[in-house]
Length: 142
Image 1 (cartoon, rainbow, N blue to C red):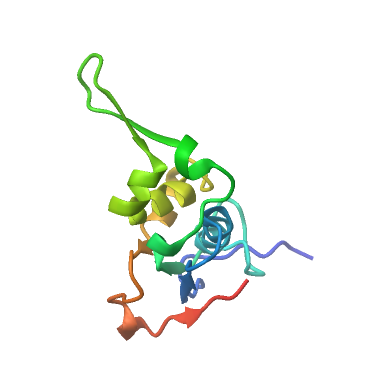
Image 2 (image 1 turned 60 degrees about the vertical axis):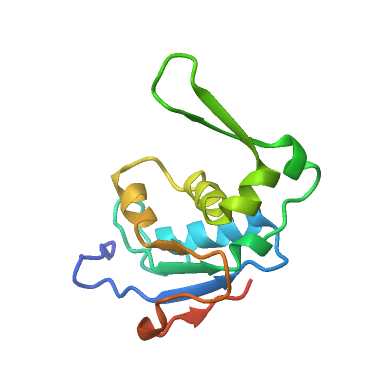
């Protein structure tokens, strides 16, 4: 018996919508990362990109548990010496909740070529509306 290896033409990519309203950000990010990598499929192989497209809506209504909203920081560097910028997640969730959700998912995807390709299939929206209705996405429940 031989091992099944999926080919690029055999992979069928579906579209899923995850509603993050009232759910912990980490749990939503875990489900999105599993769908992006294709780990929920029977044909999953680590060296092949067989994941699906994921749309996350209501990112601004996601919940950060514990005291993360006040203690967790987002750091970025401008490229100039001494210009390390830091923003509390309470501010980040008010202004750019879609970035906070994207960073959570990005941390759960491997930093490889396949991981970077998987992140291109992630779409995050702050509100309940999204622009991908033509793709007929299915609601993903967990």
